[in-house]
Image 1: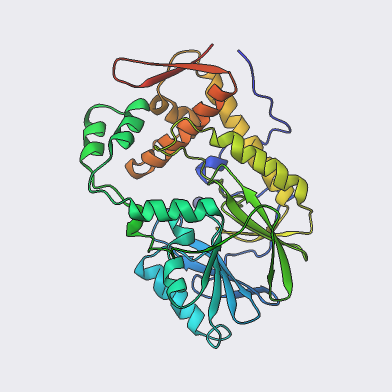
Image 2: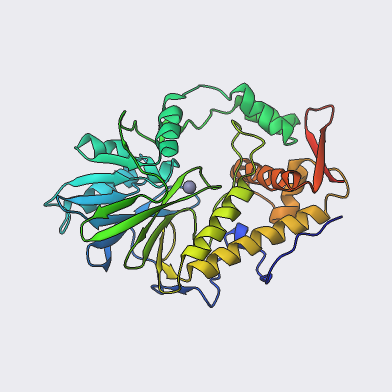
Length: 363
Ligand SMILES: [Zn+2]
């Protein structure tokens, strides 16, 4: 059996389980997180606004950039009343209230990032994002269905879900994307890898990440600020889930490749402005730490696949704690991401059992 080589293995195996520890070479900008709903100026013309979320993650950081005719907003929060009122309240106060938001840049299609973009654009702002982000959001906001779809049921069956849990999954009311993402404009401004955007006095270069979301926009300013969205985060790791619409994807490879590229692009004096938690210095160190953490999990998983297991059987091996029911869906999808990665690396095989579940095992 092959072993995955982990360079400079960190002793922290808990990153995926939302480890609060930040390594010494990663320096947070502040000792405590800014107050939710209160804009904080990071540099001239560059503000962080933390918005409330009613999810496992209780906030998202959006960024407000001074622009020539008004403000550019990077990410928006979800389309839920709590978040919408916090955003509207902040944007109506000084220094923002006297000029409009003229552009909304969204990093990726997840609801906490693009949920309110349509609302802001109703007031005249232009939506600026990657083609994948725009298309995926348009598709998903239109794809409303009252019950779980056959490909979603097949996805969890393939993962090993059965019995009472599978029946509950069939009967549950699906959480439609459109419930927390308002419709986005039918036209937008596309940005691509390597493009530059002039926003006020700053020039930002666009770098695309992958794995957490396809064509995930990140913005790199000439004076050392990097808005990373969910691509690089402190304290927690980016979720690397496989979606039922693309069940064989190797999102782990995509994410690791992006992180290696960002690690090479970054320098220690660059300030990372993430979508969750506190801005920090040390992007390269954080990328390496996150890569190592994923490789450690993959190695542990591989060592436990000498006997055939379903994805659901692997949950405890990966997360090493009992999972709450609401966590299982997301973590099953992430577990399939790990298994797909080992499979695409040629390290494991899979075959289906009589219950339509894949059994994964080493060669
Ligand atoms: Zn995300």
